[in-house]
Length: 538
Image (cartoon, rainbow, N blue to C red):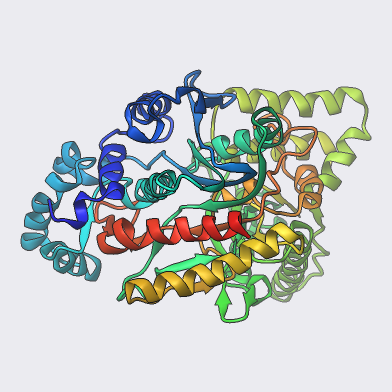
């Protein structure tokens, strides 16, 4: 290996990447135990095995757990270094799948494959990258085991200081790629964990990756918050009729198509903060609910969108979508009326919460039938959008309503946006980041920028300073809430000032996933350590 790849960060990154940990598999469940073994065998925790422990993750595989490792210094102030260890699957590697978690073996094999078949711009760029020394491929190396490795390398550097101020708590979690069950379990346990271990947790650094198809100037960054993600949904109900008598009905597919066109990239749902723009709203799924072919027009269509947020709350997002749906329905029905020569009336737009209240108003039997549907859907372990569809359709049936109508809600686990608060710990962390970025960039002769928002969804939404007051609006309008989505009755978010400082690379979640080696193995551990030192010594 090169000198750079023989660093502490590189050794940890190779060791972690070689352990397969695809979300939802036995590999992910067993990763915690194997990581504990690696930590106990390391010089970092020699003779201090009591400072390594696990936090169980409810639901799923009984062995699935978060891993904690504590490096103690002077005092109780503590910075958490955190990231996820689960990865997406390996199938996209095809014949190279056996090498997918062996970066140094994968690199020449993938480079050779790309020499003969690079057809897209992404493949041609990957081919160029892999011919040189600066990029290394591998499933999960970029997303995000190199980040975890940088955290461990920073801890090793801190351990060499006999007068280290404060403590570093390494926290590795599963399930970020699906529902963040690991981060949610850790967030709920942080307060008690700090009390038990005598820790004052004042800040956290998430170690997730950024993507940059250029020279790295966009990828080398510290983000002071993260975007949020919501999954608004719509059950579009028409009025079914025989196709030969189409003018007597209202086509749910046609109305849904009009709504899809109106909402796609809607500027009303696009957020900008300074020069940073969240991704535009886009439709992620849409299907009618007919079970087979016949010449009756579809009565119902289910659809859901990806909406990224920066500062906007779920109530505001739902309100905007209501206005878009109402405008779409009025325009659509007016157009049909002009074509048919008859006044067709309006299309009610209502929230799932309003529909649920109508069902509950019909008596205990109807309310229990709806709750039972939610429990049954959760027991089937189907995805949350499908659970949401089933429960919403059942609520519609129980309400006694007839179409047309549009029922809006949310269809998945919420990821709330985070930003640093105005409390002293948050202000101290922000200042430490600004100073560390300047110092480390100068030390390494490179550039590192500060962002307001990490542009991808992340576990920061559960560990950081998000608005927990937004949760009730989501809960009331998310059909699987309390069944497929289990949320603690008390505080569920960590509330810790958190930033992101991770590696950069290209094309994660594809076979071309590759890491910028110089930044990840040299600059990043220094950056993470510098931020932590400045927080703990101030």
